Length: 337
Ligand code: ATP
Ligand code: LTN
Image 1 (cartoon, rainbow, N blue to C red):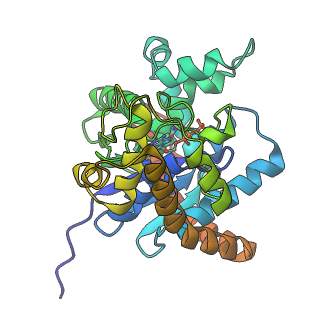
Image 2: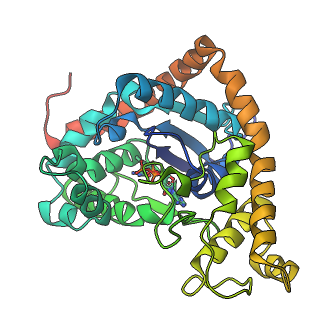
Image 3: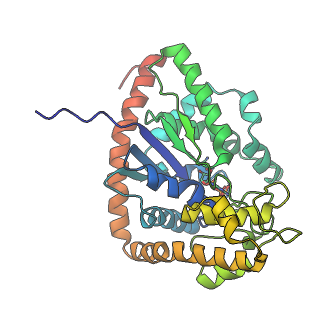
């Protein structure tokens, strides 16, 4: 009889289907998901429950969710190696989130930078969900006994909180209650910056859409956005995040796509001008995105097939999530159904 392969470590990650996905989501998250998928047992989601912490138009939310899933597949997420699903299709995420709400502390949640940022923009009525958001994220991760979570740098603090909550429950109910996860933050492209305001991170929900490069932008828009990208005073093209954030951002984008080192890219731009850097970065991004955009459109043309893929993903995920949830119910002292 063949010896069973040693079980692979578990990876899980997700992106909110708010607005259209942007280059930071691709370089900081999805591209790494694809790199890791052969060596790990991977779970990738569109986190629609997280998305409604800000108001969403129903039709747009649905379209953005289909598009996010299509973009994952078009970027190379392989259904042979990964469970691909929509968060709301697996009710255990909401169920575990409630339980974790009873173990997370007000103090630790108030310290989350993302909460401080987003609540300051929410006006007078801040949804409670924005505050408890990190505990839903912890639920996502802990349900699958996840070892590694590939995310951009902005999510590090949420990962720390997940670890703290997991350790707290392990202290109460036994060390094997939850696997304590680690963040996986790739050294390159951990933080792609806004093209117009390169000291803030690129995001889907930026006030000025010209600062974000959306994955579905046309070639003409990509050229236009890079042409207008904020560069810094001076002429020299070198990586210096503090004094040359705009130039450094373009160098990081090139490096993340081509795999070339920053030093090698800098060497190619000795005695060249910012204009060269902008045009060539636009070209590299266009070439990377063209096949992904084409495949995304094909996938979106067959919703029935996408729904079939999501059904299979949700079934696989539910089976695993239910085991973890029951384990916790039993340890907390609930009567099992
Ligand atoms: P929103 O603007 O709706 O808050 P966002 O663009 O910041 O969204 P998220 O859905 O919060 O995107 O993040 C999805 C994933 O993409 C996370 O792993 C996050 O770390 C990564 N990510 C988001 N923006 C960037 C960025 N600018 N650079 C690198 N990674 C990023
Ligand atoms: N909060 C994350 C999205 C997210 C996530 C997750 C990432 C929700 N659940 C689980 C990794 C693992 C963000 O990127 N804003």
